[in-house]
Length: 367
Image: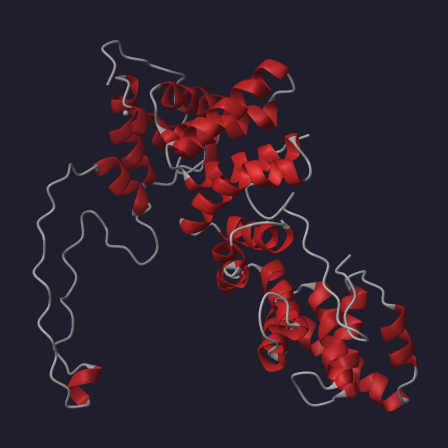
């Protein structure tokens, strides 16, 4: 079983939330060059091209910005002086620059010689291009080779990616142990994704309070770097673990809000329920309704079901039986059943049921 979590799977179990009569629980160079495997160009025959919206390498410079009035000029406001620009003194990485502009073959041509000389950052870049098949034929075996070289050279991203591939492709205890060690090393070196995933490893290895307490520092570091999954997990830990310092428990809703704002629909669902139920702060029915509606519109079936209940009970919004039935129909089509909503729907007039189905169909097709 793969314990690494790269998206939204295998996350901390949400806190059960109840609202009487309304909500129920939501079920870096070596001296010896490393040639590595040969890089095979893609079969498409397409040239290395800039990404959409970027300028061609052989093109002319784009026109400068408009000299027209800005918004503050139109308002008659005096604009403050711009801060003096600080000269960049670091080393420009042309390979990564080409990669960021979508010129993947150029990036490969610039990075591969450096990678063969043992530059860990270049090795990671070569591996990434091969792993994703960007401008070249996808080859995960070659990618794994270069991720391993980068990991051995001390590149945190290379460590993280190599650990992921080991977890995905190997079932041996030795490889799993190596993957965990690499994940921890990358996390300790500050890689945000590795911090979150190593926290997940700790939770999986020690289910319950012990694992959560061991994982919490890694979740915190990852959350501070903007990983929404970690922010969500932290909100659940802060609200569920006992005897935590008050400054942590006070931030539970803040972390949930950050994850919700990042577009994480499960966080939006929970935040809506917390606001309606008054969990980890004061009740705010209108804000709760808005967050549940946002999650529901994003396709979260549980949020659709809860939103239907809000429309029935006029919580944070006006009572609207047809709108309630629409969200019930959408949730049911997604495979979520709710006997109480079923009873509500069957109790509607036939015209209301038809109106709800029509509204659900229009929502589904975006018309």
